[in-house]
Image (cartoon, rainbow, N blue to C red):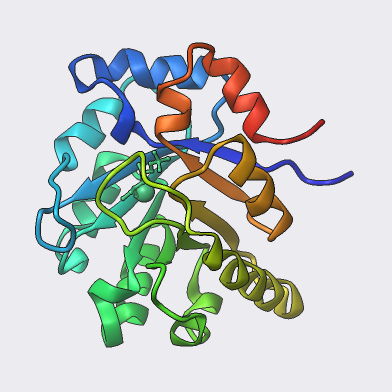
Length: 220
Ligand code: DX5
Ligand code: ZN
């Protein structure tokens, strides 16, 4: 049996005035994971939400929460995101640099799954030694900061390389992709070996949430 890809709607494109209802809507429509984009206005040129928002959303959903921290010094906040109910916390290689391994280990010591994220212009060679520490690797297919951008197809080569690295070494690690995912690019990402597809605008701008989540799985 072929394994099914997981769909992780990003609530960045949800209506924040009714965020609880939006989370319930995607859960009922068949989402596998809730992707939470935390931005600090320093690491990226946008500001979204923080710990309390995650904690309050936690009250309405049992889905795994995937907190994508687009912030500087993420090690200062990972414990609070863990306590708020994160199941996965991913941090950028570009924000952690040589401290990446210790930040990943800190996340894992909190009982939360840990992931490293690379921007479109960051090479896989930078994270080869980190992948064995990761429960997830996130490849950005747009420059982080905003929803609704176009997919950068050049990152698919990096997805294939990370897929090979995971499979050849038998690492227990998911490969996630984030940015510009729609019905067409989902197919390319799945072909390149991605396990988890993040989709913000494609899911929240669709009239039929259930249908778009099903379509993004590209199963038939
Ligand atoms: C971008 C965020 C993404 C974003 C994806 O910085 O990390 O998760 O919400 O949005 P779409 O799917 O609209 O590209
Ligand atoms: Zn994201």
